[in-house]
Structures are given as structure tokens and as C-alpha cells.
Length: 106
Image (tube, rainbow, N blue to C red; front, top):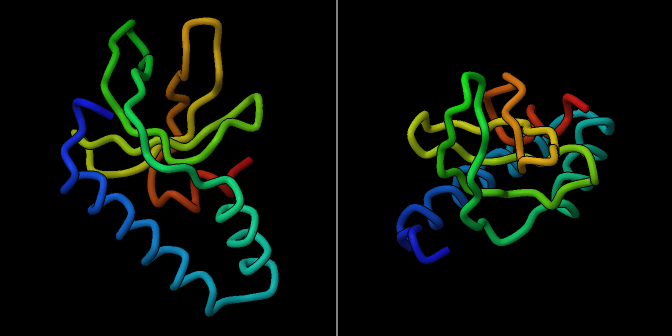
């Protein structure tokens, strides 16, 4: 977390809080997803993510891994990504958008 300024952490947390609040107003299934999502949330921390072509980018992990997947925030892009765990660390698999949408896609 040394490279992440506090304003970036606050901004990411606010984005997630807004998503959770909006989803809580929806269907029972959405509320179940919100509950699982809340349980998976972690204090955001710096993570190097692998992208196609061998590039790497500093991102913020926002959910704990389930052993296979995790959700990260991509500061350069301004949105979230679903990553698969690999021997080389988290790997972007092209699922991008809102944090809960990425989380719910698995």
C-alpha cells in the first residue's frame, strides 16, 4: 500500500459503497450477491496484475481470492477487473466494469 495514496483508496471505497447501496435496493438474488460480495471485500492493497502481451500494471485488490478469482481496481482505466490466479500472480481475463458485476460473473 506504500505506492497508493490515501485519496485513491478513499475513492475506490466510495465507488464500492455506492455499488453495494444501489444493489441492496434490487431483487433477493441481488441482495444475496451483495452479501457474498461484502464478505469477500478486503482493505484495498497494491497488486501487480499480468495482462495479455506480458505487460504488468499496478492495481488494487479489492476482494480476497477464492483460490481461483479476485476482483481488482485498475486506476489507469478507472474500473474493475476480474482476475484469475496464476503461478505468476493475478491475470486479467478481460472481464471489466463495476466491482460487483465482475464479482458476480463467476
